[in-house]
Image 1 (spheres, helix red, strand yellow):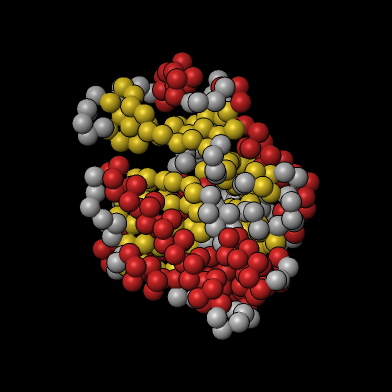
Image 2: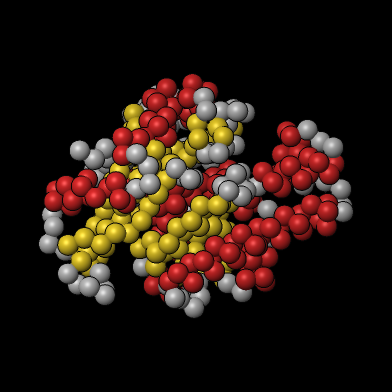
Length: 359
């Protein structure tokens, strides 16, 4: 039997993004077609608890999540987390259009060892029917995802240690895609029908998701993030790691840092984003991406949207998934807006409460 990575029907739950430098949480409610932010939290990660997007110390991560638990209403018991990185594989396969979900599961079980380059007893699998294949109407496109069971179970255990019950474990790039719907009003009116690239630049990982009309067309994870910027500050100005992090956020740096540190990092960042988009265009046969939404902690660098517009020629905005939705009176709106670009993946996970997505 396939060990399900993703639950299909879920109650209201908090989305928890377990990152290398911090844990982010978002709780949303839905009223008709409108969402409302009921709570959010950002807590720094304990050093050494994460490495290469993998949990190294479940108890330490659980302790951080327990701080999140205190900021979320006690009535909310369930949480969603996500996996990413090299241990996660997603691919579209083609199956007979007439197969039911149960028949698809049986067929995938039979063929899984040829589809997944890991021993099947070490992975958790799930799938989602997409749409009928345009080239061959007798086939249906099926999104198959696999993650190391060890990675999934570590997140489930960390959530449990932090006081939550894990209802599902998603894939970060698909959570990012889902959060796109919250940002479309930041873009021109035609954005819902256009090709939109989402780039989430975390501390150690950059996620790229390409969406069109609510469908994920392409995803890519790259080991690159804001930590490289921090380490440049550290080495250039002989600061400790904590001092470098503080200086990066506060802007308390020498005037020439723009040329010595910021400009080289911006060049690397542009290369990563340009390469990711070009790989999508090459594989899809498309000519261009219409819009770009940038998020993650590194999106807080002043002027990053203008830089991307100037260098890539793509209409770019810094993500604020809460700009046009209601906020509970108990939520600090000013602090929420400051943290908004970092909360995209957590928001996409929180949206799982209201959708029937597998992924």
